[in-house]
Amino acid sequence: EPEVTQTPSHQVTQMGQEVILRCVPISNHLYFYWYRQILGQKVEFLVSFYNNEISEKSEIFDDQFSVERPDGSNFTLKIRSTKLEDSAMYFCASSVGILQGNPYEQYFGPGTRLTVT
Amino acid sequence: AQTVTQSQPEMSVQEAETVTLSCTYDTSESDYYLFWYKQPPSRQMILVIRQEAYKQQNATENRFSVNFQKAAKSFSLKISDSQLGDAAMYFCARLINSGGYQKVTFGTGTKLQVIP
Image 1 (spheres, each protein chain N blue to C red):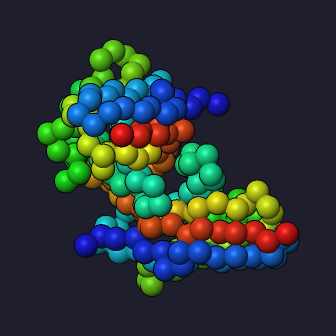
Image 2 (tube, each protein chain N blue to C red; image 1 turned 120 degrees about the horizontal axis):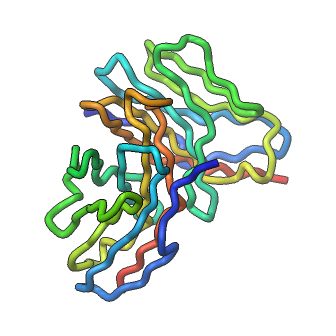
């Protein structure tokens, strides 16, 4: 069964450093998402991406964050200058879109645990 | 505000017994989907069950079933014959369509403990 993959599983970085979290969505999916879960808290929407541009972003997704689909398979989340409060689990998700298959399900990756020290 | 509320931060159940996790939501949309996700200690999000809002029949997946009360905007999860492996955080989530892509809002989660 196809699945969303994420690398690395755990990233440790120093405050102020740039990090790039990588995701490989399911191959025929068209919509891509990033979510964040601070330890002990709920999962929060960060951004959605379609057709090589951001569809919607939350108030969390400020200028320190950016997303990119650099090639046909990867979907990345970059944090330019990490802060302690960026420590969280970051989940990537993808979906097929309304006109194809089952549009009403997002498939989540296993997550990347980001620790900022 | 369009929110998803889980009023039970923690629940416990004896192995082999039945437990119900509560969820209420708010939405002005007529077309939406509801989900329960399980998050074990590995923190991976695992889809447990899905309910389409336009369907009156409650969804069932093996030992997991939902009680969907659309008018009351309630979506509870029932776990029958609880097993030790069911111990996890459970998140209720609502998905709405927004200009072609989906927007998912999660509840705060319920931590389920299964007692042997």
